[in-house]
Length: 618
Image (cartoon, rainbow, N blue to C red; front, side, top):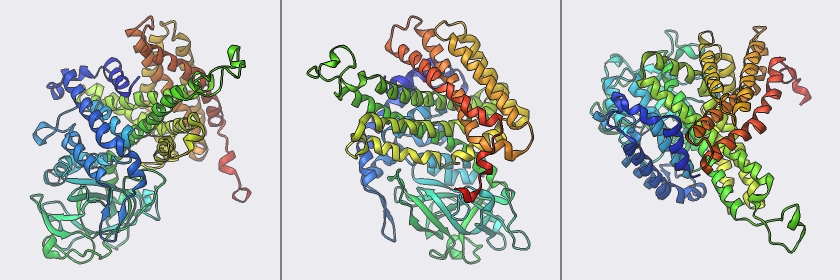
């Protein structure tokens, strides 16, 4: 099956995306408009992204001390993406949007991630602008968000710092009021920021005329001290170039300086930067930037309330985590398609029985070997299953925004529990799919003559950024399954059991339904035993194995539900497409779901081998 065939099945047969068109927001849409969006994005990805994936990997961004240079292909790809309207796809008509369901938008963006995730950095701008639409003032929306949606400006998120990494409690960037009357600036309460931010994707480039940085910083108290922990963190808009209330550039550069580019294993087509705020390289005088200048510092405008910045930023981070899941999924998918094509065309070896004993017999294609089929099936199960999970989460976002009050509340609870899985599961297992794609290619896969080594390098980032694997695991076991007295976990369990009960009546799926019910019960028992002593150190010592078991159980549910839908459409399995869905579900239940027993074993026993291992014994 092609990517488009898979997307069409998941969107329309499985998720009934067309059903959304009965809602007022999407009433102007139909299957034809959805298909037109997918057609356009598939074409742009094929023409402007895929042919240059290797080029942007070898021609890394270059900083000459004044500006960053990117290949012309990157400029052309960004322009085509912006002109397609996808930057504002989900926005209202009156600001140039399409009012497109997020599930369709996510599916359309999958083409770009599959073609060249390294070129595509546009989704950061979308997430940045969406955050401002949710938490910014009306003028902040008009000046900053709308210009990002048009592609005129780009956006970033600036959280991590060199000394703090993922520990946002230790953010040290300071923001002080910019003189008397600082609250009177029409763009928002005006502050001066000083500090350093690390790992900032697209932090400097010439793709757009301005870059809108969203920066986490702390406002000192009356004694000049920073409030400890995350409750003292505020959020600021810090534009690369100063603008006025009409959204026009003033000709003055803000005091945001590129300290250097990070040289990465993958994603080499996207700049990743260390930025210095307020170091004095581009001093902003009071007259050029407004009437409240008081000296050194980058000018920033407060978003929301002081001390509430992290809550605002999580609006962007949760959206970004689903984006990371899609990127990881599509990199795995790209490797799967490449290795499938290779396996169909590469002759090597002979059957182990019959004519295969004759050395003079013709060689067989490697796809005819059982172990190669195992590797291909593993990739298919990981990647197509992950894609279904991501689109399911995207459909929940549509439900949260446009469904009834009850449906929206259920979508919110499900997203709380599923977002750590949507980010972490593809980033681990679609990376493994990329490793298997290399293995299918044999020695050729380890060379740069074939694309699969780049897919692996690009995908290795996804277990790290937007919350590392370990952080996602602690979030899942330490917060999400417990929050609101376990409402989210209970609701997810009910959804899973609904699928189990439905598929118990389908002979081809009944054994899998029983296996899934047992797995769900085991996860529930492990959750209770992990927290039975109430000691966080014991419960969270094996948070990652817990997340692995939880994720595999969720994916088993996804595959069972997908297979059930396929059999509803084609009970006799007359099409190869249905055989693919049902066979992949069978593979996942036979080869993958049994792995959860080992993972849950250490969780249930609260095994402290790792936590108590002496440092000196390493």
